[in-house]
Image (tube, rainbow, N blue to C red; front, side):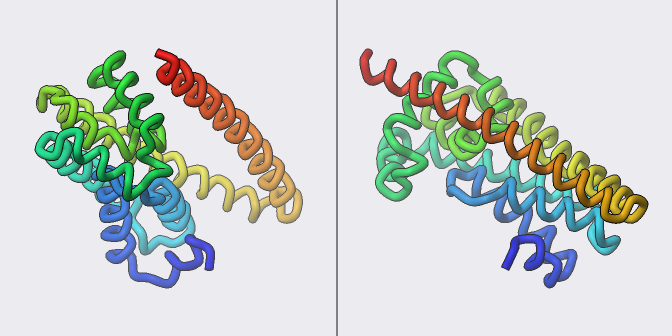
Length: 214
């Protein structure tokens, strides 16, 4: 069953809690599809009046901020042994190369890595625990965490919600023509995202190669 089809079958309160929980666990350091859940829920909110986009965005923001904060506390207490344990449990996400890349990002950008990391899938998982392991001052972490969490969660909810409303209006107005345009726009967006992901992956591999050589 598709994520959105499943979300349509559960009450609005359950969706708020689900979004906050999944994003919170992802921010804590557990690899979960938080962004997929948020996008699907925001799109569902644009089509069904029972789901309030403001409450949805607030729950997503709270999950992001609280999850990152817990991850920071765990990382600060667990230290590098925690990263080694995560590497054994989730080798695909917490490999030595990924950790080294994330550490270089933190060393170069500091609190900005926490802020912008919210918008990058890999750093979104690393940000909290790694900031704690690297002993980033808590006030810096908290500032970047709150601002990044609100902008990412609230911004994503707002954009997808209004895009969903506009798309639905177009489909009703232009019938099959609107459907064709929506498909073309979707395909174009997918190709652009794939190209950006390929470039990002190449940059990560290059950084890992340089790190290994050093």
